[in-house]
Image (cartoon, rainbow, N blue to C red; front, side, top):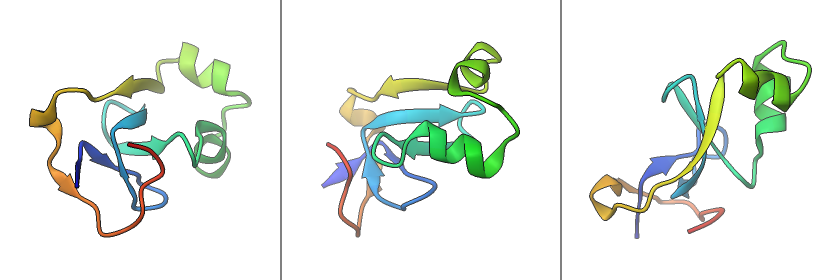
Amino acid sequence: MKYARQCSVSGAGMNKGYVICDGEAYVSEAVGIDYWLKEHTTYESAEEAYEDEYYYYTEWEDEDDYQYESQTQTHQQ
């Protein structure tokens, strides 16, 4: 099965989740944005990071975006 992106934390394929800094990293819903923010930033809350446009949430629905073939179990489809 192909996926749109690969989670930068777990390596699992994902078709929805968080986009960090316009694509520098991707975080699945299962890992969660709070984990990423705690480990990689000084933001005090997800709301603060979102308002600062550090990340956004998306779902890739266009199968033309599905380029990554996961060798690990996915968090979501």
